[in-house]
Structures are given as C-alpha cells and as structure tokens.
Image 1 (cartoon, rainbow, N blue to C red):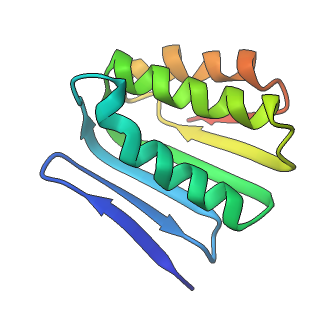
Image 2: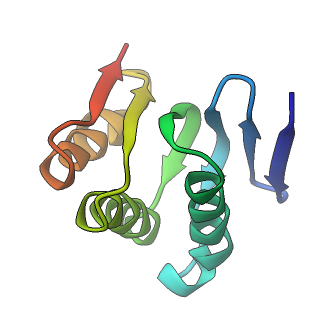
Length: 118
C-alpha cells in the first residue's frame, strides 16, 4: 500500500494505491488555474502510473472554487480525449452544495464516468 499526499494549510489530497482512490479534504480556493498545476500533475502522475480504475473522493472537500473546477474538468476531458483506458468514479456528498452542482458536469466530459453523490 502506497499513500502519497499533497498537504497545505487548507487542504489535503491523498492517493491510496491499494484502494486506487484519491481523497480530497478541506477547502481548495487557489487563485487561478496555474496555481492548481501541482494538483493536475499529481493526478496525471497517478493516471500514468496505472491503468484500470480510479476513484476521486470529494466527500470531505468542503469547497472548490471555479478555477479548481476548471482544472478538474480539464483533467477529466483529457482522459477521454487521450483515450486513457480507465474507469473513473467520482464520489461526492450532498452535504456540500457545490458538489451536487459541479461534479455532475464531469459526466459531460466523460460519459462513462460513474458518479455517486450521497
């Protein structure tokens, strides 16, 4: 089991390779998409290190601003555009309003994406 993480004062992003899941916690409100580049690189590295299934778990992410949503949308869109062989699952929580609204849009970029908002 390998767990890799990005941690700052307001957020933590952890990848658990045994679960093939990326866990997002806290609040992500970086100023513009360029400030999200380390997160994009982190996700790209995970995708390129394996094929198959990947889950993005946002259930503990209280907030993601529009720049972050753009970066996430671009990530999902690139998976489809580059024909990456992966089954992407996205988990969300009804507790955080942004998730119900924004995570549903990811299916527009990747119709095979499995979305589970509880």
